[in-house]
Amino acid sequence: MQPRSEIPPVTFRDVAGADDLPAFEAAMRALARDLGDGYAMPAEALARALLGAPPAARGVLARAGPETLGAAMVSPQVSTKRGAAGAFVSDLWVARSARGYGLGQRLLAEAARRARTLWQAEWLALAVYDGQPAARRFYERLGMRPQNGAVMMQLDRAGFARLTEETT
Image (tube, rainbow, N blue to C red; front, side, top):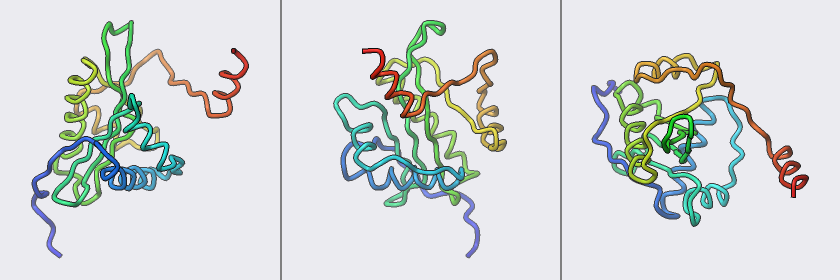
């Protein structure tokens, strides 16, 4: 097969219902495989996060006809330091066949536009794994910079359960 010179026309759509969930979940599983991560999100939890009232996050699909070429999950954040609402992109995936055509930038821009509309977001944040230098270079080309003077801290499920039970 001869390599394509471009990808087919892409449309972006929100994960708006149960019919969109299988494609989005498949994209998130592909991202986990690409990163060498496990995938622990049960389908029901993903549905609650994206379709619950209110949703905890928004899912955006990049599609060329029936084929999913990319997906992003974005959530609102508010920062008193920044003085505005923002958006955190927890997951961004582009299919291997669609890489190198600018789809990652277009998908990130689409997620940012939706965050601006939904939450009046004025800034964007995401995390890049240490072992993903190509991803870091991609984000730096877009103008993103590491946040110096801060370390992302995380409380796992067990710690979260203890915290919420012990401080009632």
